[in-house]
Amino acid sequence: MEEEYRLYHRDGSLWATGQQINGISTGYWEWFRKDGTKLRSGYFTHGEQSGEWITYDKAGKVYKGTQMK
Image (cartoon, rainbow, N blue to C red):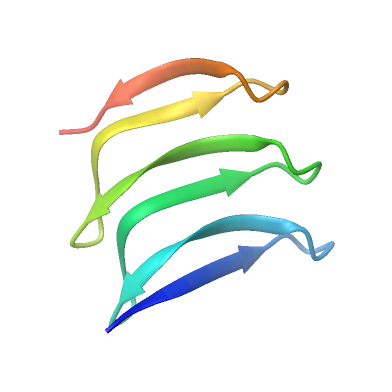
């Protein structure tokens, strides 16, 4: 069963959000800096990074894309 999953920084701010099935990351995930701006986003397939992953600058704009194998 797919369930929403969230991780938090020590200060309680959202660090990452995505989905897991039986404890394995799947689907779309996003990571955030402590100030709330998006840091990175991409997809997992069976617990492995897949497709294009995007890294964002401190202003939240796309900095680069990385194609995962």
